[in-house]
Amino acid sequence: MGLGDKIKHAAEKLGGKGKEAAGDASGDESLKAEGKGDQVRSDLKQAGEKVRNAFKKH
Image: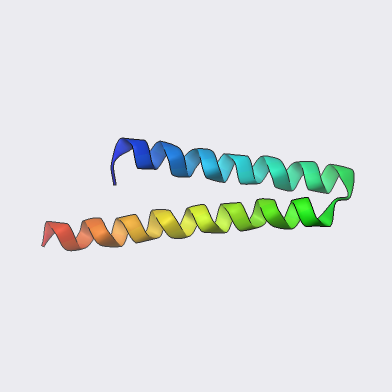
């Protein structure tokens, strides 16, 4: 995983946490769910990159 991808995924996760917090504070369940979804999507992308990199090494 390149540095640019790592930064992009970290920013996506951070943005998701922000959305979740904003949704929680305002009582907006849709925004809260969207934030959680962004975090999960970011985690999946990071996991996929790790698997891809593991196969490149062998």
